[in-house]
Image 1 (cartoon, rainbow, N blue to C red):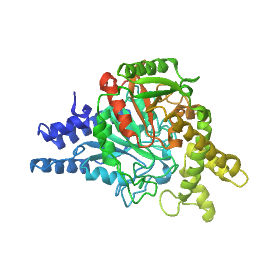
Image 2: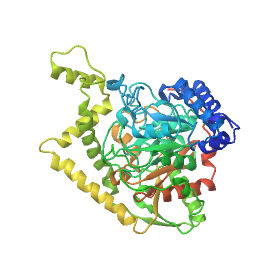
Image 3: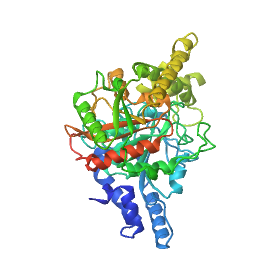
Image 4: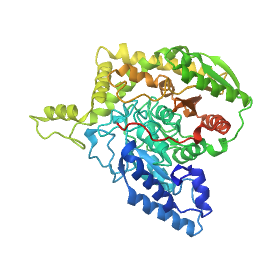
Length: 490
């Protein structure tokens, strides 16, 4: 197996035993990038020299006999909505094409403190609005398992980079499934932590009450290592929860005997591909064989989750994106009759179609005369959805479902039908509405394309989810398969 295909924990063992150098790891990943990036198009920017210098610094630490962190010398990619000091942060939008932040996101500083090697910024749906990474203003990222299929979104670049060996781990953000859905499509592990577990400081906001940063990795162990690195209270984020968090490595125990697992009937209803259903049912059987007790349950307000999400998220986006006006930073039209005309022209040309669609939806929902009918009602339904989960967790340790209703679809297949595209996240977005943790792990394949299994937990139960995910992973070999990088490049 090539260096770029190894996991972070295996590379850490090789580094500490001096069987390999951090610079060698970094060079191997950038060699892989040179080989496949023209096909995958996972990155919007790369920082090769900076990465190599960081890797050499890790090597010097090892040479001096100093202890290194589990992520020291490990190449990690960052979604391009995470602020990076001195490096462009575009959110894959024309309106921020030249924006260079003067500070780092907290998670970026945390990774740097761990001596992780940042490789670059990954492609995404513009302002994290999308499920396919087709909404990027700059390029389309391809799915490494089939280059004529989407990698999912909005964190498609991060998922594809890890799957293709262009990074060992990566960070993404999840507002309605934007980590878990692309993780499922690309056959990697992706976790959305409990809201407030990971600081959002320096994450360019889409929907502030829903956004959460989380890791992509090749296996559950690496996911736990990444979560350890980025979690924790941050005084710079008012939504960051001031609570002591566990060492998630302790959750990597291959034992779920006696665990109670709920299977929500609503997540196995019409719209779920029968072949995906069979893969998930086989995965449930594996967990039962490992001693878990599985029982069907119900989340009765699930049918309202999609419509609730697409009122709350656009409303918050409308408010958050009002700051992009061409005055302080980013894109600005040159020709304008007055300031108001400049605002209008800048936003019209700077934002893509999907962003404009959601901003208009949100502005409408918040407008006088419609606030009570739409936004306020959506907030009330959100409470009902959260209570459904609370009742379920009185009986179950965690819930299980497909991550997505189908495997990755082809480019252009859903672009002209926004509602069909939105349905790609139908199994993930309720988790964000309730602020819960969720993880997607490789569960099998349909016609050579990955299928993701989603585990959903009560607040701050990441350790339980990681334990169950680790047990399943150790019972199967799906996570060991690597994509063929075949198909037509779009």
